Length: 417
Image (cartoon, rainbow, N blue to C red):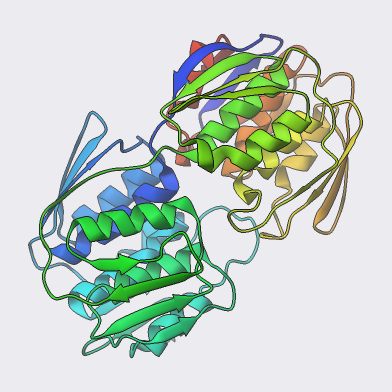
């Protein structure tokens, strides 16, 4: 099992490029199934989850060629509509293959998805939307069987603005008869990126980024070339790394609007943020101040994927911060590990109270999920002595493309063993 060994106390300085978005490339990869044509995708990050999904696409019959962060997917052959169980169990995002397969072939058999254990993430909303469109769904022995003659366009009101459900319904609706309207849709930037990819290959979709998404079904698609948006969570994580080390860094190839809330909270903690056209500078010359409340919400609220990293920063801040996690109920796994390093945190249900301490102390900790693992790395950067973070390959590599290289480029003493 790979580990990070971090010697803390180094101030991060310099500039670094932000990779393509994990949460964008996965639904885009699923979407390549629909066209039966060639998709050329640029700015693809080298991640464990990306490797898993590319492998899955190859298994069901696609030809994939990946080099220098450009991926070519050819899906013109007849595809196997039975999705292999193992990769689906490892990666929750694979569930969006359901909508894509229904759009392409009208049937699919897939197991229930896995992924990080951060609390219940039921797919009832996905299944309800697909049923409304005319899909017959049966569940047995851990598998979901979906069949339809042809999907029908309908209006679907989501009980919750689920990103995955919004994506699944968008994918399915690309070939549905008539018009599908999703109300209370997720507004995340990754939804907009998926719309842009699908429209690039001939789909007719509008409204992504708002609460109402409209999809007009079409019958024919064509080849597409697309560049994935930058990863706002990677950018936010690196900004938090600057804050916790009192650093001064510039992030290149970012979309400023996607980072507004992270910038706001870090400004509140005393950091100086300077925005340019496609880059952002964060300078943190003093010990951070506590941010009164950080409450996670669906976009454009504060991202649950940034909660753990901000908590790491607040462990050494002057004062007390309150975190309220409204999205996932089991997203405080990093708390116990941070406390091993000397953090003062008390959790009551979905609320965590963080009282800043003078210093953290390096020790051996274990990542329990993707973003919690990133938080432990940040804590290690600021801690006195040596921190060893375990479970790097299992969790951190799922969402960060060689995180140690980026941090080392900025001056961190970090290496993988």
